[in-house]
Picture 1: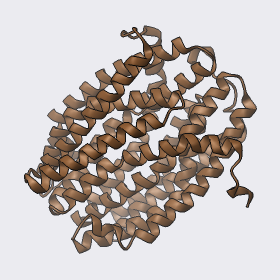
Picture 2: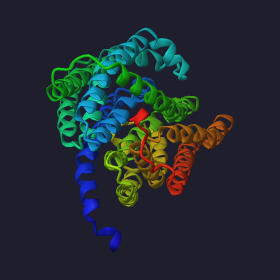
Picture 3: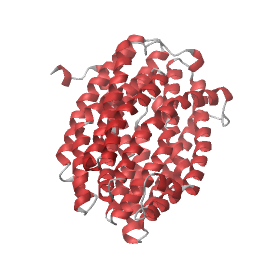
Length: 439
């Protein structure tokens, strides 16, 4: 019963994580809306969407350090009583977002066809994937503005503002996609265009809000740019390793058959909604740990870590039950194809079983991120690729393992990440305050 009785610290964490949970649940809805609408156009468009979203996720998630490092630096510097330094971090984050976003947009537009081919797209799906990628390129810089702005607000322990912005953007997305695809008949291009408009709205909104908070400073400080890029480089390697696992899972599914690829796309979008929703509890973990370390309160940081882990495991029981109980019914929302539904049902059952592993992996990530322990996050993600590769390779050698082999690889990957990060947490070596040179 004690586990179900929240302490004052639990209530602080929940007060920050509930709006963050809403915002993080809203983010994957972009993909879910696209999947639900495009899925009814047939196997080809759905498979093309799976390939395109996988490729876009590689770019967007690789830039995730704009949110993670910005939030950690802002929280630490505010905890240390240095708001001017926090503002400099935010300015630098937006400039990096603009530069990286334009580069990624060019790559997505000009390299759409070879990218789709590299991910295993066959003739049935490649044109749909290329169309979606080229239209989506327009929205990439604005999506990176969202990352920088979200990091700014999280560092200030404000998760309500991102929630409001992302809810409005997703309402815009749903309305436009229902107009562009079923009504105007624009197909995959209409789905991508609706998402682009929503990204422009949310990215511009974050940019304007941050500009009002940081004052007249508009140009980045070289030292802060270098700090973000150096720390971000470590996080990028970690994120690329994360994306390598998710991208490889989609590529393996694509090489099984189109129906299994479609079923995997449904399963992975629900995984993003449920498992990444658990990451909402890592948001206050990172923010409060960074703030406590900025104030030199090591015991306070440790208490935040313990409370966050307990709450994450409890939340995973709910998300896991949702996936398992919904496995026979949820696929009907996304496809009328019986073979796609069958594969999706298996994916959802295994997705549900993996939720506690995801909860531990994400929460430990947040704790160590707040401590600025970026190197261990990179190392654990790289090492976790080894156990992931075993069932993934087995599924390619023995295709009869099917979608179960793909999701066994994902589950082993999560278990390995959680175990490696748990060892670091138990050692206590994450607790020392980050040095001034990295703060």
